[in-house]
Length: 414
Image 1: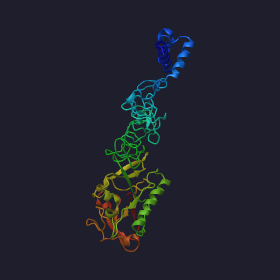
Image 2: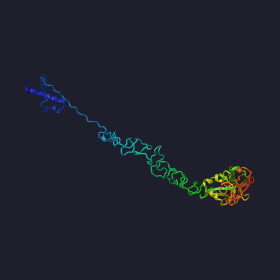
Image 3: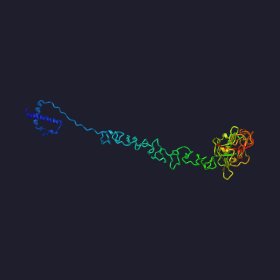
Image 4: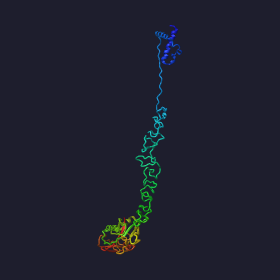
């Protein structure tokens, strides 16, 4: 074979390999491949010649082009469907969440250092309110089951104080225009009553500087209008009785009955409903043992009603228990339950000494412990007092038979 046909054969084979590998499309032009575009006859001849000549086997390799990676959340690149992407800094407690969304209040993700809470809802009645703040008293939102009100301020003098409970008397906050005071306790004996009113004479509550306070403006009752004098009433019975009085307790009941009956006459409602006891002693009991005034050391004023003038007056008889048993009254106990002066039959059943104990008084014409068989009989005798004296004889003066008649002293003793 001549050298020229062999050269053509080699060139043809090289061009074929170049075309198959697609390394260069320009190799198909005659100028690039040095004769690749010669006549068909030459090519056929060359091919036939080549096929008749043995040649080494040639391996053809192809090249594959790689495809770029698809966009993903967390790659640090903000793609069209992402709000943010901080790469490895993404996180549900970061500005950019693990879903590549901006961390905002209400998304259910707690942004560290910015949000106090985030429960992912729009409710302001639970524990996490607008602004992702923990619910507190004073935030303006009423928290269910925990707050009764919340006006969003720190004022304690309006309708909703900082306790987030509606203002009320006793809460310790003085509500403007509604309360005069509020000391937050349940005592009526201090400067602020339980009605949140400043304590004053006439409010019905006894203060440390008051002797009494009955809450009214009646100056003829048990408490003076200046709250300076507490009063208890005394009287001598208008009627007289034999020594059988039904015992001490029967005599007590008689006194209370007479006080109530006085309402039907000319005495206003001063004595009704009050507890009275008879000033009597037997061999077991006496005013000094059965009167509460002795036990409590009553310090008010014992008074009688006087209806003998144009206006009803109250006459002081003794100041306190100590005055009643001092042996000298401030005024004779000589007015009955109607306020009238008693000036006849001034004998009074007693068997009581000036000190309130029972029995014979050494300075009186009396018998030893004489009490008409415990004031239950007309047999025997009983020691008596007298109406007119202010001295100890008012209660220990003489002695008389139990079938005679005498009056009874009635002393208020609640």
